[in-house]
Image 1 (cartoon, rainbow, N blue to C red):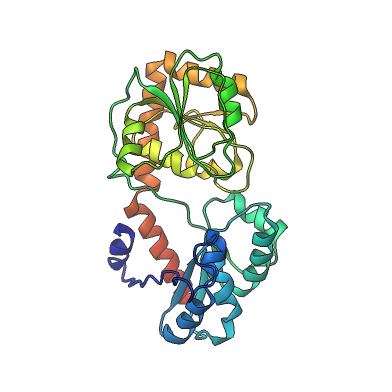
Image 2: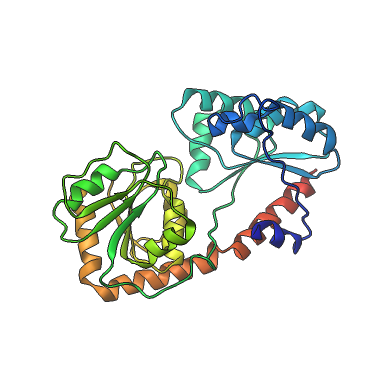
Length: 317
């Protein structure tokens, strides 16, 4: 994987320890949160990886079991949790409250999450913003398809597709919504749902065949829609996004996107129409979005930021 290859350039060697299969992992095949807890894997890491400087757990599942074994880890090893699931799921929140006091550093995607976490959960000693990245070589810039479709992609719980469906009723433009949500129903002939699994190549083709990409969300503490925003921006597509604090680190309103208020179908419709009717504005946003990616979110830029963070954490021990 490109990320781990690039880390070597910054004198960081990494080992990936995947979840164990059933029956070694009793939660294998369950929800991803439960599957990642994997108690035996945590024990193996605690016993075998005695010489590592930093253990990085992606999300709270693995960090929970490692935190429970904190006293068995080397005192010279830092325990880091990379990203956090900010939802209303009671089980997840109990796991987070158990885990945060036991880790050394929490890495979050956006600055907005820091105050939210401090006000919502148990104390965590250090919280740092790490940002996000996108494969800007794969999702490469292509000219805007002026006659292309309006596209929306994503399945995270913060997506607000009903507001897009409301806006779509008066849009004379083909709209494709790529989602696994089978409860969504459109009363408009111009809306098509793609609910089957597609390849990354097909996803990239959808971006390339679009003239506008829409990311409608509810107001959430997590970065709902961030992957779609970064992929579309990397492809050089003009964006319409909901004003959601979770994605403020990844956009610049009126420079890399048009931003609309939450739950406002009229504003969403008008923003889409303004981009369809104004190719100059659409191109400006597209160019600025791609430039934002190249400055902040490529593999190379993110890996340097991540490596600097790891060296800083190592230096505190």
